[in-house]
Length: 235
Image (cartoon, rainbow, N blue to C red; front, side):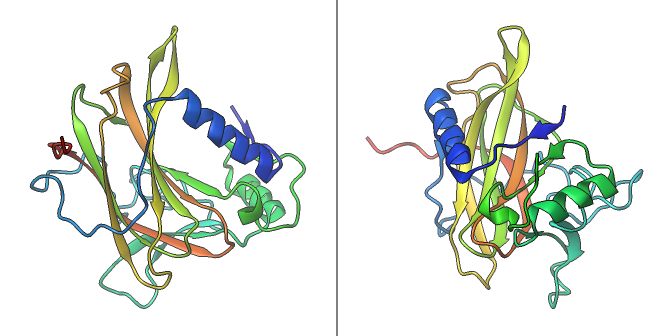
């Protein structure tokens, strides 16, 4: 189904607030760079191709395990001036709504649509979203999401969980990491979360990379989802 997006920052902000109030299982990260080691020894990431190095065997224009980049607002590129880093995801929220809609149509991307697109930067309304494929959630398991980020303070990473509810599959959980680092320097972020603690019906999750306001270029790399042992909460 085509996703028609709301047309104002007010509506967008209201929908986010409503969602956060309704879904009590939502966890919001503090949005600071990681200064501590992982909560347990590193595990194998359950998220495929989080370093974006491998191309899809069927469609070489996209990284395996992720949506197809539109090639304008969202690009899958080599990190400029950093040959050792390899492939990354680049998001440019200075691109206009009109240009984005035209690019989606050109690329045959049908899951996104903006009714009556304007000439203003997409940063001023919806931002840009980029999803991984779904991965299974193990009941009772805590996870850690980690990733590298470079750009303005308008970047976020969601992990969203789906499960059966009232006879249909619905989004039942999400955790958010707000990216606040040095704009021109890669920063690693980590957040531990437990998708089934309060939402036992969650059976799968997807990572969503997101760039918003201010208008500019945002970079993502080395996204991992690892099973971990949670750090005990202070008494």
